[in-house]
Amino acid sequence: MLGAFRAALGASACKRGCLAAGARPLNDSDCARGLSYAGTFETYRVRRSVRCVRAKAVDSSRMGEDGIVKGAHVLWKDPAMLQLRRRAYIVWQDDAPQRCLIVKKPKSEEASAAMREIGLWLSARGIGVYVENSVLGSMPASFEAFEPGGVEIDFCVTLGGDGTVLHLASLFAEDEPLAPVVSFAMGTLGFLTPFDIRDFEKQLTRILVAGQQTVGCTLRSRKRCEVYTGRGRRLSVHHTLNECIIDRGASASTLTVDLFVDGQYVTTVTADGLIAATPSGSTAYSMTAGGPMVAPSVPCTIITPVAPLSLSFRPLVVPETSDIVILIAEDSKSMGRASFDGRHQTRLVRGSSVRLTTSLCPLPLITVGELDADWYEGITQKLKWNQSIIDQPKRPRIPKGVGAIKGRESSNGSGPEASDLAKASEKTSETTSENDV
View 1 (cartoon, helix red, strand yellow):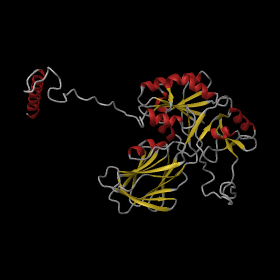
View 2 (cartoon, helix red, strand yellow):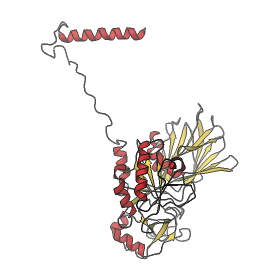
View 3 (cartoon, helix red, strand yellow):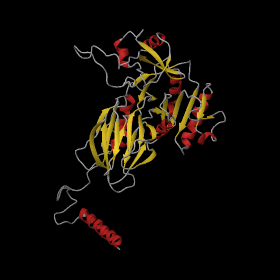
View 4 (spheres, helix red, strand yellow):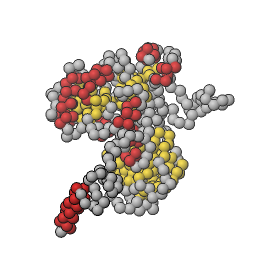
């Protein structure tokens, strides 16, 4: 597998590019088939020091493909810039990365201690460590302040839960290639944090030598969310890793929205809200609202209603390349509120809308296991999926019938058992009287 990687890397020169913008990383199925990669794959730059292997780009608007439909030439409708493969390996462009951004869970002394320890460990290996301004004052003097849009980061480390990963993604507001992320679990429940903080030396050592051994990553797709006024003026743009939520906010009335997919009217929804989630967000709010759990490598968008007034409206799964528009209906009883990964709350008046498309550049999350193994472990171990989450209760010690326990009960209700029950009844009566007063 690694030999195929190196052969592909040596077959072509490195060029600028984005993982999602046409990138097609080498996956396990390609390696298993034993294909010859020379001349068919080229390497593309993701960040300054990381590249991936992908197939040579083809302009699908001008060229078709044979061998898919018998006797026919296939021309693709989906944009050529969006590739649907999400499972890859990373290979550092140079010998090793030079700069690391560490983001931690706020107000956590444990996370702060881990940040110092990991940062000093990286510094001892010649890697520059960057942290946010809010924590710089409590960190060693060798750490530097991170400024969005400033120095280029080679890889990131998060210390916390899923919220910490979402915060990290929000620091990169532009749709540009993102640095790979190593996420250590220090939260309560996390599907984006597969690494154990106790093994950070072993895991980071493995990641720093990516190329000498395979380091897998999952390209987590993001949604580009554009907010428009009723007159078509764009107010803001956000990139979400989990979901965009449009709800009724603090209003006690229901919200009515019109849903369009690829320019086609789909339905009108009257509900408490509507969720448009990525596969990464399928195990968050969307799941609690009744949406399906979707593996992160599946290229799709999940549309889930929140408490709809119609029992017939079930969650929808649409292609990742779909252009989705959610319009606040003119006859809606309440105005809407949009939030993006729980941030940037925006009031939506009647006639305004939110347009959702797929961001060109996903978030590369480095994985512990192969393919989607981390995700399956998350739903089975953390959500206890298909397992009982409580112990089966034991049957109370109550006699099954009169005289069931020989020598301890009598037919006239006398004996030790009857006496104990009488005393318990008296105590219950006294307690009830006190509570009534």
